[in-house]
Image (cartoon, helix red, strand yellow):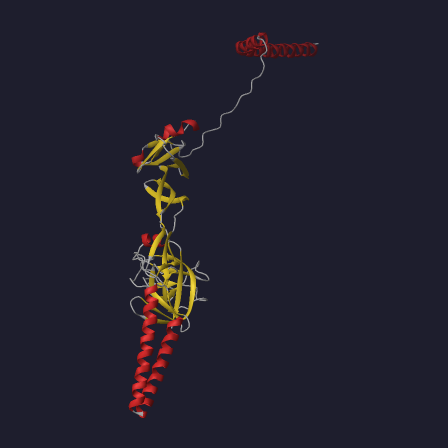
Length: 409
């Protein structure tokens, strides 16, 4: 019986123990709840508040990249030209011997000239060239003008034979008149340096050649004197012959021989006289003549001529050429000699270099005289010669003339 009671007591004790554990669990759970409830309640309020707000569209968020660590140049120091912001376009202006730099950043093209601080006048213009900070500006000062120069054109003198006039007589039948040439030049002055260029040349008035007529008719008195002289000589010769003949036979032979010799000499003289022809030339005394002489007579049969000074020259050939004139102080000829008066240019295929010449205008009024063929020229071809004078003005006065060239032996 006591065993049954003990068993019941054990069951009661186990039940009480289980109740005690359950209460302990409930107590721990309550403690945890009360500790965490405020935080839970705050989160709940936040959730409720968020749920009650209106829904807004999402906006894109652009992330700013982190700055790169580099050495940034904030300004450019050009020394005496100034200090300028980096990255700006700078113009270094060169004008009137002055150089300075200006900042053209943001300046419109139409306002650049004003920005440069320059004024363009006349034909001024600008040139540019890139540099490390922008560009250089070069202001070129240019003036362009036209000028004219009047040049007197010399006239030629022509001599014409007139058989109605007596020998020694001459007259000017046509007065010579100078012509007029107007040359137009362009004068350009760029940054103080001047260049002059011939752009036009016009002959306003042609020169009028002077014509001088000279007589070739012999006077009647000269003819009579010549005839009388011939008759007197013949009579004297005849008388001498007779006188000698009557005195002595040997004397007659001697005289006869002398007469024969005299006749022969006379015949030779007559023959020589018939082949030598008077030119009628007269030296005009022009500054273009290098001698005061001219050719007085020409013996074409014997190829010789005589000057008014009495000198006689023999020649191998005679040419009619077109002559011009040139001046080249200190120049050297094609023969290696110094360019000078008397050394002329020729075409070697017509006149060999080294030839000695005698030159005068075709009317004999201008006499260059004795010359030497020592030079050549690109334009000197065929029957052309180029005569040397000491000044450009003399060359211009000579111009272009027809000359007679004797190639001397």
